[in-house]
Image (cartoon, rainbow, N blue to C red):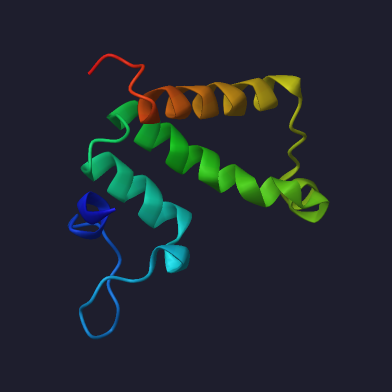
Length: 94
């Protein structure tokens, strides 16, 4: 946790301290994980894109955007998750 809390990308409080981990956004977690070397650049980039897909969990958003995720969309998301887990477990080549 020290490695994450000392990262430049770690979110700050108004007084300049580091926010408690439970107050970090997904964006914060992705950026700090990359800076700390826990994930690679490809995972960082795909994770930010995948983060934007979270809104499609709401059917209204799907209708507004005229987007119908299918099994291929789910497979892409699953692959990003698998690669992230492999990175965090040290199973990817660095």
